[in-house]
Length: 406
Ligand code: PMP
Image 1 (cartoon, rainbow, N blue to C red):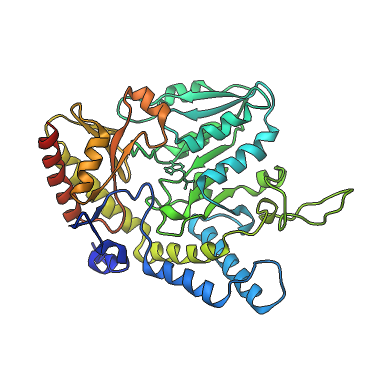
Image 2: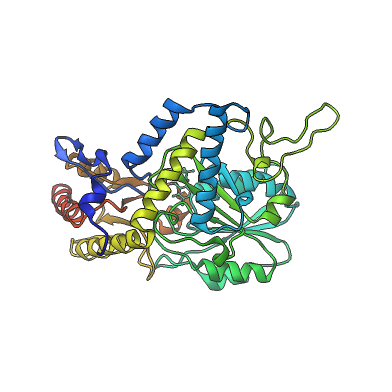
């Protein structure tokens, strides 16, 4: 692929040189968290060593520099997802906190007996926050089923809307099945009923070029640590009109206009939703990870990952008793599978002994596991730095493990 020198790209990730059980390490768990290039680690050190001063709190030079770095990342994120304004970019701790923010703030405007549409393939982070709303009032979750191939049952989806529907909460890409959901269609349908849509973009943002205006998404949540970035940083994109209406999420420093015991006023967007000292060092370094993706090209990375996904799928299908969960025509990044009756933990542990790092278990999607009538799967996932040789090593290890267990 033009401009995609994998050796050069891999050289940016020192961690790729490490061994596991004295074997070359093959990392196939980037859907859980991706590795971080040296430029991001360097930026963390640089900020700590040069301008670790609190943001938005001082007139002194160091504080100004730290604030400028944080706000430069906000602009970088805005451009990356094509939001209209930096007012619409709220820094959080991750996807989970971004969804909880919407659930507790927008959730205040949901009345007793009203409904939220979710899907059966959601991560717990896009289920439990909506269930928590039910502690104080009766909020009903309507669930879109998943079809055999791992796509959403769109006929049922369309039938779930009524005058009590207040929100649709759906993932862009399933972290178990890899299904890329038809977001534009989902959002257009919901908007016909004037229902906003929250998108859990955790598994999409580093694999698909996201344009929030083109999608017309009302909320879009994602985590930096799945984007070659630091841990502890995430983003909630929200349309300004909605964020303006919503009450604050947490109270504290940074999110206020004025405070007195009689009356407190709140800061303007986006600060209204950013109480307390943020992970401003992580936020500064996050910019480097977005620049890394832009330098290599999200579309080029996606094409490379697609090749790996297709190659791995073809090779896996040759293994006796292989069952792949999620065969949607449009998939991204992940392959979940089981072999015969072998337990996913056993497979994961043996693969690790051979240097292959995969995920096992329910992947924080227990309702999906219940629908599939399984306890868990083994999941391999890909990122920019994976190679065909990684896939070959994975397939060879799978054949060995399968023979050992079988
Ligand atoms: N949603 C999906 C689809 C995910 O894959 C994940 C991470 N596994 C999350 C939400 C939660 O992300 P975080 O833990 O970074 O908040």
